[in-house]
Every structure is written in C-alpha cells, then in structure tokens.
Length: 488
Ligand code: SF4
Image 1 (cartoon, helix red, strand yellow):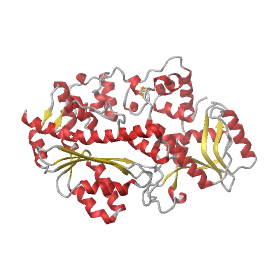
Image 2: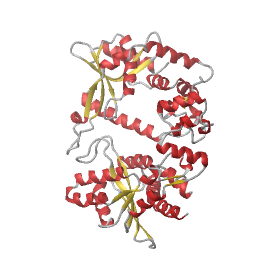
Image 3: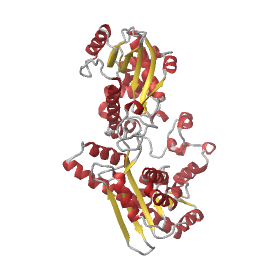
Image 4: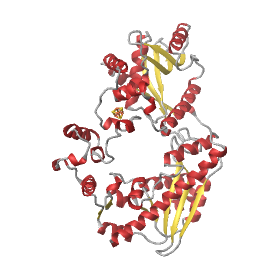
C-alpha cells in the first residue's frame, strides 16, 4: 500500500520512491536533522492534543492500517467529534492516509488539521494535505475546512507556556482543493513505479539536493560539477543541454559571471586566486589584540526560557582565542554551560569577562554571532550597551573568502569554514567526535531534556569543546594564511 509519506517522496522523484521501498540499505548516513524534526514534530503533536482535549485515537501498531481504518470509521459512526491519527484507505487505489486531527464541525462536516513544527504553512504541506483530503473524502467524510496547525513565530514565553498563543492555524482549504486536479493520475503513476522490477531511470538534477539517496546516485559525479557552478533550473538546463556533469564540457558562452567565474577558472587552471589589494585592506582593518570568537547555540522549537520565541537560538558555549600582538603566544578561553538552567546568564557574564574593551573581534559569518549578541542585549538590558559594543568591534573573516578576494580550487565553490580550512591549511574537522554545529545543538537539547547521560554525555562535552575550539583555531590559522599569501 502506498502511504502519504511515500507519495510525497515519489512526487519529488520516482526513483527515490522505488529505492525507499526496495533499497533502504543504500541510505548511508543516519540523518540526525530528520530524526530531530521527527521528535520535535511529536512534541508539537502532543501540545496540539492538549489544546483540543480528549478525542478518539485508534491505538494500533503503525503497520495495522486496516485495523486503524476500521476503528476510525467505527468511532465516526459512534459520534466521535475529535479524532487523532484517524486512518483512511482509498477503496480503489488502496493508498492510505493518517490525519493528525479531525474535528467535527457544528454542521456535521469535518475540519482536517495537519500539525507541523514549522512556524508557517509551507508548499509541501499542501501536497501532504491534498493526499489526505483525497483519501478521506473518498471514505465519505465531508471535509469542509483544511488547515495547517503550526507554531506561532511571534509567540514569546511568559512565566508559563500558553498553548493558545503558541499554536497558530493557517487555512489552506482553497489551495488543497485546487491540488485535487490530477491527483488520481499522480497516485496511479507512483503505484506503477512501486511495481517496477528494477529502479527507474531518472536524470540527476536540482531535485536531488536533499535526497537520502544522493550519495548512491551521485557516486560517479566529480565533487566540483556543473551543480557547483549553477543552481536550480539553470543547472538543470545546462546539464540537459551538455549531457555531462563535468565543468570541462562547458562552452565559454555558458561560463557564469562574478564569483562563480573565479571558481570555475581557478578549478580549470588548478590555481589559487588572490586579490592582494583587497586582502591587504582587510588585514589592515584589524587592530590588536585580536579576539577570535565562536558561539554554539541550541534552538528549542517550544520555548523553554522566559521572553524567548520558538526556535530562538540560545547560546550555551563559546570559544575564544586571543592574539595580543603579532609575536605573542595564543591565549585560549572557553565557556560551556553544563547545568540544566538558562545558559545565557553565565554565558553573558563569562563572555563579557574575557572580551575586554578594545581590539578586533574576528568571527566567521558575523550575522550569526551579531544576532546572538543582539538577542542577549534585549533579554539582559542591564548588560545591553556592553554587549552591543562587542558587535561594533566585529569583523567577518568569511568576507575575503565569500567575496573571492582569495579562492582555492579545493573549496569546490563553497566559502564555508569546513571547506576553506582544509583547502588552505590541510587541517580538517573529519577526526572530531562532533562534526558540525547542528550535531552540537541537537545533542545539547538532548542533554537539556535529560536524554543524554553518563558516558555519552561525558563524550559529548569533550566533543563539543573540541569542535568549538577548532572553529576559533581555524580562524587563527586562516588569518595567518592570508598574511603569508601576500608574501608569495
Ligand atoms: S538522488 Fe536524485 S535521482 Fe537519485 S533518488 Fe534522489 S532525487 Fe532521485
């Protein structure tokens, strides 16, 4: 039977649908962010149940679709007016759908609600609800209104969680009904794909961006390819026209402009590019002592701390390297909040203790750190002015790399520090226990909820200290590299 989630995968790519039913072994990496979104989705789902109160829920195993369907239909006959996880099967196509919430209206019609942990209704929610509407209405459920129930991005936590204000409903009835056109054909086509003996042939393209099978389908493709040079429809069009992913097959008339042209020429000539004048101006804008600073944050979907909003980033760690002058030894300071209370209080205190009053503060991608400082200044107005002074001293080391004042072909078109660091220094993040900010953040939230304990927690503390330390050390190394590149 084709489920709603398989239908949605199939709409993106029929091959992904076929692989998801036949070759799940090909999903190599554990997708931590998908797992996180699933957990957060469940949390918001529980809050939605509190909001609507008691209702019928078919308590079945996930694979007992027919039993769940029978129980749902029985509950409707018996007069249920709120149903959670109601299940319906389409009598013809045999596809099935579960609805997060069904509410009986006064006129005996139904409201269909999809609960999402996002802060608004997204385009892909429409296909999701469109599938549900198709299946439930065939089961003679008169669905009159359809909405996405999501988090309210403007909600700010006061003393206690107010779920009436936290949740928000966006009516999508009109667009969902419009999407009914052609749905039967789309379902039929995807059911046919499920019966294929071999995987279908599908062109690679921009639709592969977030696919779980990307490693499998793209294994023969060079790291730097036409999708590194162009994006979206333009990349698809050039790929179709050239029938090749290799940038070597591009004709000069197709060469891009601006930064992407620098990347391409640098790759083809295997040469590092440098604009000495601009790099020199950048270096001259820095004044000692230099503070290399990096924050780690976590962003709870459901606010935990007073005056914070859904997904507001909460800083819990910083790493700071200080270079007082060209010859001085490197100093290191750090703070990691390891108790389950508001990290921002100690974080702010420790940060202000070590950042002093003069000298350039170097960060990588300043919008992130600046935003955290602004949020802290708002939440702790007694330190507001001192905190905002830090932003006035900030300089973004991303700029020389993002602006292509300096570029190595090993960056493969990206200016992220994880690409730039190995490209210029040979140092990588690969051997670290924590490999990225997302992992640091998700595991910190696990700690905060009490789900990370014992040895696992000890390893996490060590891992996250090492990760944040390398982020600031990387900036020290990159700055040295910029200096030395002017001498060659
Ligand atoms: S990587 Fe692309 S072609 Fe392969 S299954 Fe995913 S979306 Fe389809």
